[in-house]
Image 1: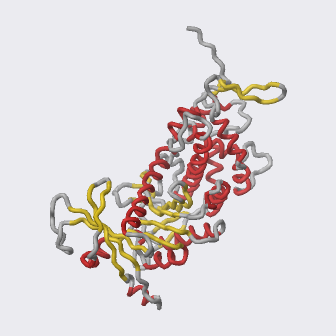
Image 2: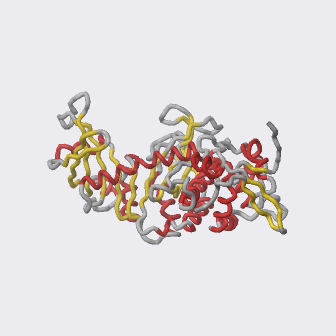
Image 3: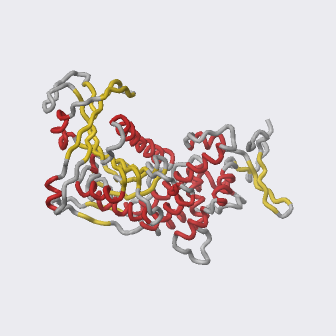
Length: 430
């Protein structure tokens, strides 16, 4: 066997087509305009830094160090990007960090630490606007918190009895990351959530003047202040309820509709209730009536519920949507489970499990940058799947890497132009 070596052949030739597509979208210009100006003698531009960061995950890496250990030999003479060292990239990202906010509840002694990076939020919004996502006629937001386990110097104990962060994340139309606010692990999801949502809606108002049509969240959002804010900022909201708050209403439901889901038989019904009466009076406001959708399923062990005196497991949803049927509301709220899929993608495909910094505010920068890469991937996979038969718009990034990015290619200079020579005769666009 005779082996002919060539150091200039890249194993990731497909990434060049991604760079070209992003250039057509003017993504590099948006990044440069949104971030602080670099010194004239800076060796690397924001385009180089962002494309290098993106290349880590679009070429199968997991850590920032992959730039040096795995990618550098494959990006020699690349006209789209100059790869910096991992230290240079981390230094530039750390310069974008903002100060943390320290808060305490009125009666609590726990110190809550939050980080909201307005500059990166604006960058993310600008890119989503460029991609046309914010132009959707009907916006659906989902808000949830996730735990990122880590042993950073400032991480705190989470409710799952391990150290980490617990960022609040809002997704747009189930596919794009709209907003991120990093929180320390000891900050419960319901702590200061009204302030978080106000900042999110404030950022969204600058790009979308019309109200959000649908907003879904779990029981951590079952708060008077949150519900009042959602009445102002959204058309319809759907909030999960803790049974301890609303189980007194379960026996009042008389009309049940039976249906089937993946777990078996399910019954749904709804009634009108007026919650938060005392809180409304404290704010000199009139209590509002809402619709309480109740779902129940027979218990496998047949144990009797002490409150309802039957053998059902109950779940409830509070909503101001009086138009949809009970089944439609239940099915629509069930789609909120897609948040867990987004968290899985961010953690396993875009590096959220491997935070590079040792502080909350700097890791917030990393979370936003990787979320932007995830948002762009949605556009990239849809664009190239329309041109390549081997791709599907539902593919996770690993399949995209194997079927498109891993492509032997070499940049050559010919007729005073840089041309990409692909060493795969079967590769092509339809």
